[in-house]
Image (cartoon, rainbow, N blue to C red):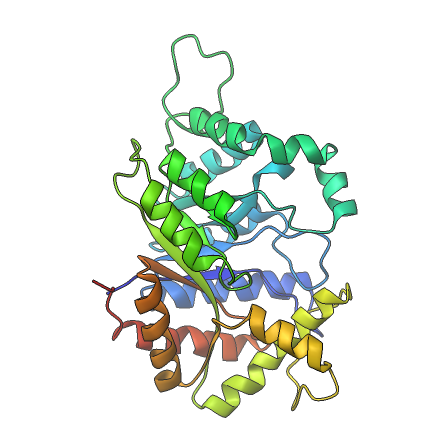
Length: 333
């Protein structure tokens, strides 16, 4: 059985506040653990009225404290926004609080607009250029200390928190392969380079002390419901959100609408449908068909699902539907 995981952004729905959004993430993590999901990851975004997971390590601690078995982590931390030492201390602390359950997924995108990124990083060029070196530095802080090592991450040292590389391009595939790291591709919003990136990663993978063979996780948007019609209705929230992103309109996560007609023009519809073309939206049977095809094409080792649903109870039902589908999905040979 292929592992299923969840990517959450702690969405702040229209009519809700950050406290409610963070409590919804807690409820979702509990539900995911009850239904046998492998991981519950949270993503770093900044300056977005519809996302409450900016302080990612704190939200990971929040959901980790509410669960006992499921792995929790970042999908991801945007490392150029931070000092590697600070991230080592944060995730070393998480590993001490939640032993054996913490993952550290890393990305190099800003996770926000350029003005906010500048406020976070101060030096944008140095952050992006130093990304590979920052990963190696971070690995050193989380591993066994070298003799006479001057700088120690405490907590962090000897924690050996598993590091994943996240990406949406062939650059990340080359880097994950060279460093021998597990690789998660953001096909839930960046589908175009998925197959090329997977091929490059597998072909060029170099075994490392932490990973002997390539390991690929792929992402999708997912809305599971009792009927296809209900799922398509719930998915209009995500469609609205992506139209808003392209217009640079910042709002809380939208409520679903009866129809997208009049909300988007033809070009916006084509763009959003292309961006979300791997989304699995529907009833059990519809999602099963979609995932069998998608996982067969990618040969992925793991699937991570982002569930952009406004109503928390409908979101929890979607967690159940995907778990039911997972029980019939086998890893491609």
